[in-house]
Length: 148
Length: 148
Length: 148
Length: 148
Image 1 (cartoon, one colour):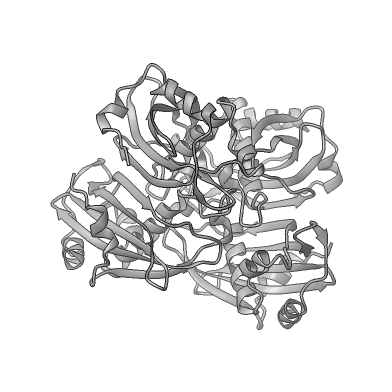
Image 2: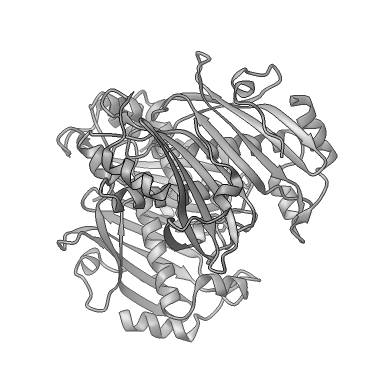
């Protein structure tokens, strides 16, 4: 299982795929900052946006039974707290492709460029009917390759 | 569609089906009280517990394709705010049965008996394969009948 | 407590405040359709967008301790199931203003105009420090008045 | 930052702190298995239970402004999918204590002993008023020390 170094994710890639969003009212926990688990929701949302933008939307893949991409590993490093209403940019900054697996690196930053958190997820591609490993679709291999 | 009166739900039934729980860290929102939407999660959890206790667990029904019970209506009235760590009791206090539909009344209270919120959900029973109305299983009709 | 008629919410207002979004992967439940509770999250998100667009963002109001707007009541009627990837429009279609309270009516529809669900929430305005009723800010009274 | 080896977490500790639960209807995603992000909710719930059982409930600590424990790092490794209704045991199996920080290791298993997932979180103890590092309460240092 390939993993990126943490510093590698902080240094923002020029080829990043970025989405802007705002911290929602219900993302905050009883300590007044964004619940750490919500960062993974943010990662997943940009992952789904990337798949769609790459011409391989996950909803179509599941409906057609062509491929699924369950998680093998997920991690996040938290540098700064986020609060309700904070504007953030969630980006895919790195991707490492293997025949049946992809490691995706994420970064969450503020408009002024400060890094709030980084993370990575390792997805295994499967044939959803049999829940067995299968090759990643070529379109995605190319799309992740362009992120690098 | 049958609905209970709000006062009817506040007055606690002797035949209520009750579960104790505590407000979780992540149930609270940026205003420091439980996010109003979480109350519906609490209602759904006690509904699922009731189905299991009645011998008709929802997971088995879905796996076997025997029945589903999507919502037609849901509502809640909020009387008092809840905070992280508050112990609560979530109860099914009323049920009104029709051949293909059930209206379920809920109450959330504190240990001292104070009512925090009430609510109700109207579920339509369906054949999950065709997504068409079907009769409620007899076991459930009896179980809801005992709540009354 | 003022409530709208259900048919009133289905008939789309010309003055609606609308936001487009898509059903997320994690909004779906074990029955394969959007979990009924998520519809209330959709309502809350468009409510927060409306407050911001009206010049009274909720995050600023809470940070400054000027006002809060906890729920007294929430309800939804479900007409059609939603699935992962479905594009939807979530709108505020009605608003009824009283000095310390507002009833907000919502509609969720598909791009072809089909109504998927409607709902309404009743918010009480409070002084967040004392958790006591207070007057709604004038900006919001006007903004809700324009929806009507 | 101290982290456990993955194999270390799979091998169940004799001193584990364990809680049984079931996969909820709303924990499942559009692929029909538990959404990977929910595993972190499961970790957080057993962490909160452990704090309470150790005499240092998080709700009291936050209310009294004595300590908070935001995350610096979180990770999970997924071995098997979980489905709606699956009974699971979520355990704290390891803990590594430093003066202002604790690394907590988790394991999720089935009743037959099969490991479904493992994970770890690194919490920094802070003075919640100033959001600055502070020493972990002695009670917790001892409680985590007993897990080892």
